Image 1 (cartoon, rainbow, N blue to C red):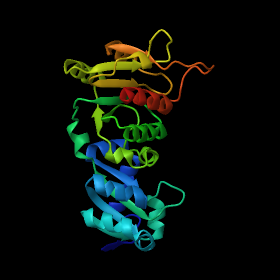
Image 2: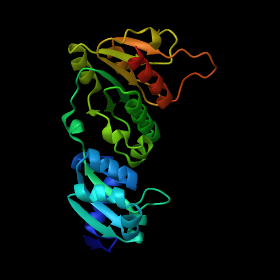
Image 3: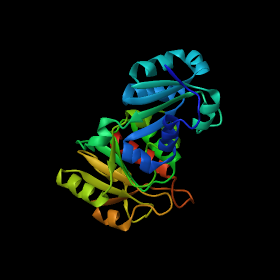
Image 4: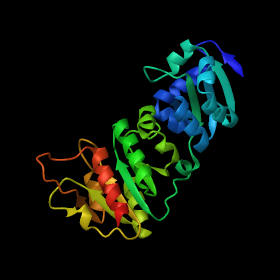
Length: 259
């Protein structure tokens, strides 16, 4: 295993750039993860391009590091100082990976089933929490349109690895995507706090469904709302005007699968 000792090393700089830049991730088809558990999850679900370890991490997290070492195309040992520079957390474990996007993201494959769509969701914590709920409850996938990308390091940590296992589809044109889905028999639902919408519990969820959650501040765009088959709401008896995006998504996901 090659030892990298300079913080200015091009491989280190490239990894940090992928960590910090959404455009760099999208252009390269690579994403950055850190931590022994998350990196081992990544190694089991995505092709690992480069892996970086401190000597202490190789000993402390030997089992998980062994999984990564077997899968990674390139492996490097780094100093604790470099690990501190690469880390996006307060207490780095000394394990980092640069991985290739899973095949499902590259293919943008939409098959029959139940999907939650996120339009312009900005908060990586919400994005990660929704993907964790989606995997736990068992819908068929998540469609991400604009906003924070799912491979934002904070979103990956919030997902607890779910984002690496869930079928995720990247969408750049919401209206075209929905139009194609409707032609294939999908029921498209736009969620809104508006009380004149249909309660989500009254919707017939048989067949394929896409349910949309909008931006934290502005909700779903008018164009997207108008393109959907129905507008749905989560009935609320309290005084709050709306729910947090991840909480709303959890209820919508549950309603999609419970029937």
